[in-house]
Image (cartoon, rainbow, N blue to C red; front, side, top):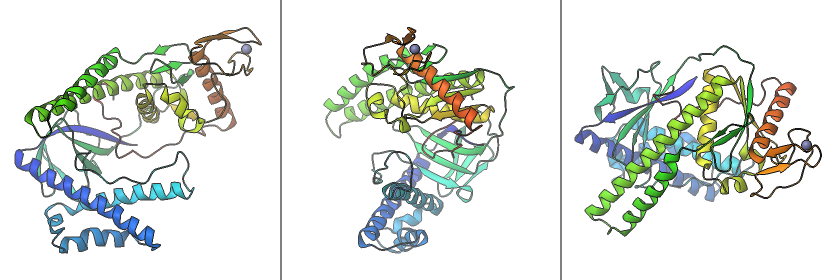
Length: 394
Ligand SMILES: [Zn+2]
């Protein structure tokens, strides 16, 4: 299976400048691609992928406005071209109804102050001793926090807003199936918690995250009061970025531990597919943990594949919180403040979230009985998502 391994980089000042150039060029090429495809689309012309690449890279390098593209590794530019192609195609397929799932919006141009990165394939980077060689940048110092399981097929270099640099390698890692067990579990997004399981367990969001939320808001306020372009504003922005990173790391760590425990203790994990259920908007709107939920689902899916367990998303329109998990009677809608209710048919008293998780478990078992193993859809590693990169748990 393909996973990502992430390491911190320590580029020297000159290398930082070379990287900044590469990030800038990749961004320009990406945006030029979108613009060209938009223009062709508007004119009703078809344009091939090779022609796009030829015009925004090869021909552009010959013009005075874009001649600086020659200063950076062309692999990074080609990858930017492909990223734009994929973004455009996803949007186009979604528009034409060829793509399942929620509608995808037109790809936005990359901004100078947004997230930057360059992606390099085998001919753009190499591991030289302890260092990572990046074409036209040089040999970068890496903190090898753990060893790579295999030779990487590609690397993404990412500068974070707090000034740190990371290399994210895509590597092949053999699956390590755990001995089989006979337990399975349903999980649901809790109202005030990360998840609720069909066993009745409530896994809370870390307290730290709530506290950090207040600190983030305060740092955001401080930043907005600082004068534009001032040194004070720059340091306030840095403080905010550091705080954001700490929150992100804590959230990820908690999600890794939760996912690992669920996968290790159960042969099968079932969760509601919020994208399919149609309840996503209303459910997530009232939940502070939407980002946490999708991150957790990704980690469970990845760990299940790693350890030979199964994970399935239950996509159905049945309202899981309205059906009694004991007798199956649909008991009608429950306002949000109703945390506990008694079934009008069998009298069982339910906790709202636990009942939903039990229904998900039942639906998952039924799906499995119908079509053994269906519903488990392996997905390629997402480029943006830093999957499987955690030291403490992976
Ligand atoms: Zn009942």
